[in-house]
Length: 209
Image 1 (tube, rainbow, N blue to C red):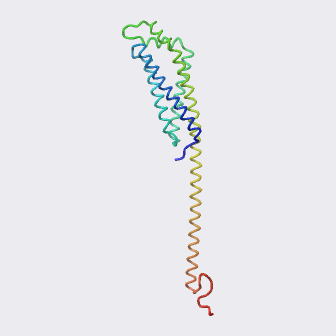
Image 2 (image 1 turned 90 degrees about the vertical axis):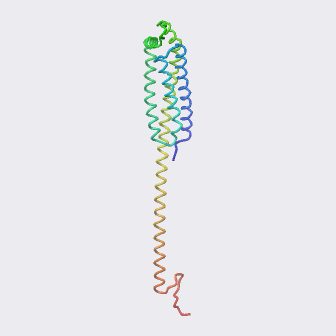
Image 3 (image 1 turned 180 degrees about the horizontal axis):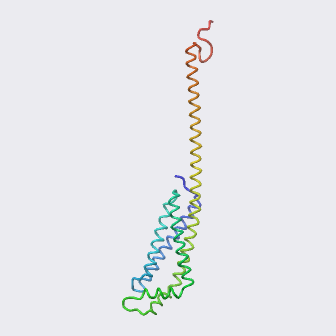
């Protein structure tokens, strides 16, 4: 199967490798928050789940070199992921206090950790979470753009390949027709020579010396 532009593909792979590392970092941040707060909560589990999802998406990208259909599905997933990331980033930047209140409420442990203590845990890591989301959003958008460019190159190469194949088929068909016509002509000449006693190489077999 025809693949796309190799240069675009290598950039695409490199960016997906970065996205894979970011997925690991997001999961690690969720685990760190889980250990720090000493409780399973929606905030830490959201980070772990998001990190695993980003990691799986990045890993799947290494199987997309030749398929425009799979590349289309991949770009659609990245588009949705980018939209979610941009939305979360906007919420982080514009509603910081509400995010802190919501997260603090959800990480209070079963032993009665004070709301203020829970809030302190989040405040110590909120900027790190924001930077991770910014990095993830930026890399995801870059992967999306290069994925779309690479898909276009794959589609273009496949179209050129199909056109070449059609041209070759057409040439082969014409060549076969010419060969068949030449064979019919030679057969007619042979039959004519046999009927009238004419030597195909020239002259008449009955010609007197």
